[in-house]
Image (cartoon, rainbow, N blue to C red):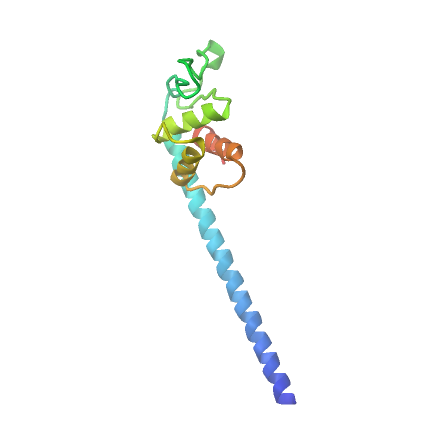
Length: 145
């Protein structure tokens, strides 16, 4: 009876140690993934910063017509040198700016373009489409996450 009790205790201790090792390994993997994401964010921010002017006027061919997405710049809209100024406000406009900035296929669907941009940026597709687009815009044009 004492031997069985001792065997159960040893087995339980072994399971606890294995669980502890697995938790430590999971924390290490999570830390490495976060470090990779931060490195990619810094790389993308560095790529976005050298642009001296905002992307050129984009046309709403998919929305119909030749209306520019961006309003003409005014004196109050002047951006500091090296800062990208982006006036896109709708989801379609934002995705068009992201497509142009990253050189993505212009005829892809919104969701396909966002998925490709997330992949190129090394970001997880977390949240809804609008949240993902806003995160990409912040990353590409503000240098933040």
